[in-house]
Length: 559
Image 1 (cartoon, rainbow, N blue to C red):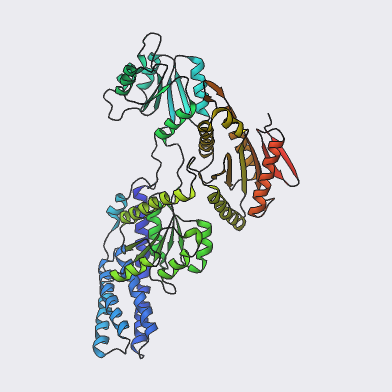
Image 2 (cartoon, rainbow, N blue to C red):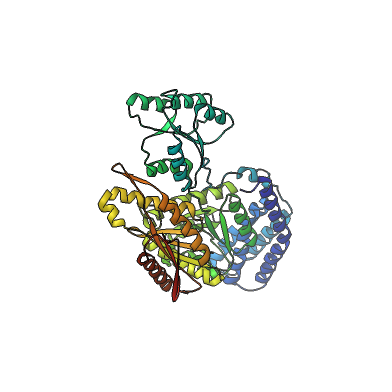
C-alpha cells in the first residue's frame, strides 16, 4: 500500500500538471466559440463546444479549480438549451454566452488545495488486502513422534511449525510472542489439564486472544467445556484427521493469496484518467487506462478487468455506445460498468444505466467515494460470478471457466512473447479410493489437492477442476522446465500427506502431464498435448510428471 505522503505528492503533481494545461484548454474553448459566433447555426460545432466545457465541469473541481468548475457548469447548461433550440443565436443569447465565457476566464486563476486531507482519508488497506493472521503455528505436544508427524504434514501446506514438548518451555516462548496460532494437547505427564490451564494463563489480560485449537484423546463434555472457556476455537480428537485440521487452520489464517482487483478506465482526459488510476492504485488495485476506444476489445480480452469505469461523454465516442459494444461480448456480459460524468440530469443518468451500466458516479469524485464504489461493485460481482465460474466443492474454476482463462492467457502469451505452460493432473486410482473409503473421503482428497495447488502456486497462476478427480493448471510466464520443477514438488508433497478413514491411515498420489506454448501454439493442441502427456504418466506407472516435447516425452519423479 502506498504511503499517504507519497499519494499526496502524486495527486499534487497531477494538479500542477492540470494547471499548466488549463490555459491551453481555455484557449481551445475560446477559439471554438469565436468560430461559432462568426457563422450561422452549426449544430455539430456547438456539440463540440458543449463537450469541451462539460470536460471542465467534471475535471476542474477534481484538481482544485472549484470556481472554474461552477462557471463551466453554468455555461454548459446554457449551451445545452441553445443546442435544443437548433436555431441561429439571437443577440441576447450571444451576449449571455459572451458573459459566461468572461466569467470562465476570470475564475480560472483561482485554485484551492484539495489533497491535504484526501490522501490521508484513503490511506487504508486495499479492498481485498490480505490482512491475515500469521501462518506460524506453535505446537505444544509431549509426544515427540506425533509432534514431528504433525509438523511435517502442516509443512506441506506452507505452515511453519515450532514444537514445544513441555509446558515450561511453552510459557517462556509465549512471553516473547505477539502473534501465533496455538495447537495444543490437553493432557501432560505432570498435569492432566495442563494444556487448558496454560492457555488460560497466556490469554489472561490480552485484548485479542491467541487462536487456539485443542487436540486430545479426551471427549468428555466437562473437558470440552473447560477448553471452550480457555478460548479454544476448535476441539479435535486424536488420531488427528489432517484434512479437518488444515480446514480449521486455513479458516483462521486465510492462507490463500488474493489477487488485486483489475479496473479498466476509459476516459479521453489524460489528467482525469491518471487521477483515477493513482487513487485506485493506492488502494491496492491494478488500473489500466484506455484513451483510444479503437483498442478497446483487444485490451479487454488481454487485461480481463473486474470492473470498467467509462466517461459518459468523449469527443468521438460516448460511454453508452461503448457499454453496448462491451455487453455484446459474452465474456463481459456480467462485468460491472460504472459511468463517470458531470451530468446531473437524472433522466440521462437513468438512460445510461439502462444501456448496460451498473452505477453512475458524478464528477468530481472524492477518492474515498471512488474506492468504496469500485470495491463494493467488484465484491458483489465476484460473488455472483463465482456461482457460475467456480466449482462448488473446491472453489476452483470449473471446466468451462478454466478453458476460457486458458484461451485468454494463450492470446496474451502470443502477443507479448512470454512463456506459458498448461498442466493436466489426475488423482491416481481414485475410483478404488471411493470404493474402499466412500465418497466423503474422496471429496476430502479432492479438496486437499485443490488447497495444495492454490497454496503452492502463485496468485497469477490459474487452477481449475477439469472434471471429477482431474485438475487443470495454467502457469503464466513459466517455461516447461520451471513448470516441471514446481508441479513435481507439489506431487511429492501431495504423496506424503496422510489421510484417516475407518481407523486406517493411507496416502494418495497424482499423475501430471505438461505442455507449453513454445511447442503447441494453439489452445486445442496445448490441451491435447498435456492430456497425452498425462496418459503417458499413467501408463508409465503413475505418481510422476511427464512433459510433452513432441514427438518425445520425458518423465521425472518416478517412484
